[in-house]
Length: 120
Image 1: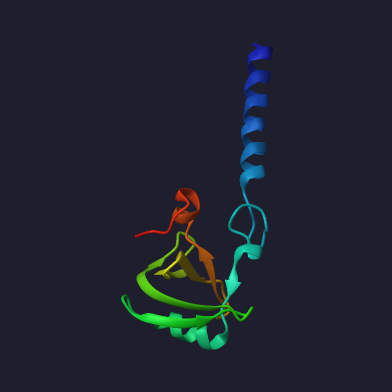
Image 2 (image 1 turned 30 degrees about the vertical axis):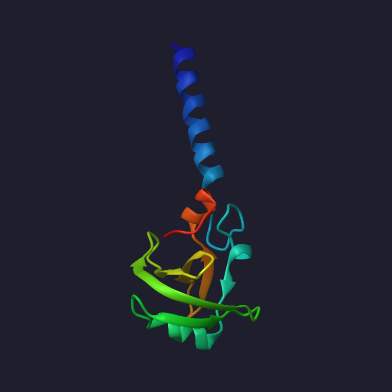
């Protein structure tokens, strides 16, 4: 009986440690979607995206001075409650989300990363 209880305890501990290892905290740089993968927009571009409507074509600039011409495809709230926009450039599908304190950033679409091509 003691061996069975010990097995359950070890199994439970393994599950808890595994879950803790997989979780991340805000600001963490682990995983594919990290602060290092986000190109933050300038304040002027943030205002454009913040109020853009579906179908609208925007010219935006990130803080690295990279320019994007994109079309807004969809607006939504992420699972974490962030205001987000799905957008398309001629080359890439992008996701633009608010990261707090009026800070918006661009990342490549997760679907694009998995499939190796832009969304249509």
